[in-house]
Length: 380
Image 1 (cartoon, rainbow, N blue to C red):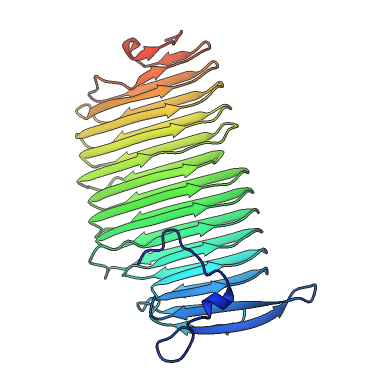
Image 2 (cartoon, rainbow, N blue to C red):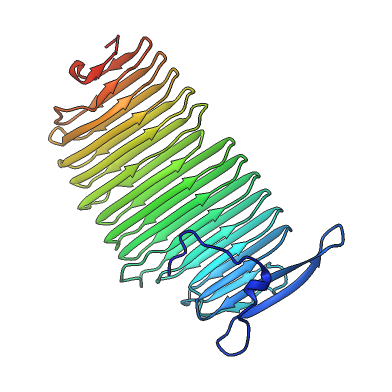
């Protein structure tokens, strides 16, 4: 069962509709009072039939820790309103958390060798969310765990960490953050023993000063990544696949903010076969984009670079480095838009191709680009 974009229970009453004995849903209820004296209901609903454990709270502050595992399907809660700390649920395959306006401090620690899904919506207010996910050695078959995080307006500090020892793991991470400054850190580690490592990050940020750091460290034989962060002012991305591996495929498709973004990407790989696709969208303001790949193997790198950087004084650096016998097959189309822009292309190894570069209006500089691959560039 996948909860990629979960639909939360419409109300506590709806969550309670199927309650009863035996294998029916079980619910823990509490009633608290806000400062104005109005009562509101809180519910924790466990449905053995669906395997979903739901937390559905109204406006309040939350400071909770939820531990999944290491036994399959076992969940222990601490600091959850209306539930005694240490309460344990079994047969759980997914968690849904929804809370109303307030300050949320949530920690999720997951250790599971099977599929498990986590969906969190904290509503309006400041939020700190820490997700630590471990796939242990015992995960032999393909699994596809997922995390979905949503917030309303407010300041946010979010960290998601995966440490995988499974043979074939495809980790799915998606966010939908509301307005407000966000500090986000995403880290995927695939340890020795991993055969196929897959990861998708579809990260949407709201209006605000958003700073994003992404790290993928893979010791897997095959690496497949799809990274699509959107609407951040600063993005730093590092991909490490420097242990011997057979192949690496990465898609990097960031979208900056209207005022301009600082976007960085650096990949170090020992795979003899690499496919790297860049698809960068900037804003009307000044963008600074640095995209780099260093190959440690005398293999083949196939890379398509696409970029649209808008109407301002933008800087683009595109670098491909490797041993003299590494072959780089480069293609794509880059548009710098209006303004006085600067684009640098660095190629090592064997390369006879380059992405097409359209410098647009302004006095533009193209460094390292073959003249035949450029349009409307004044300086070389």
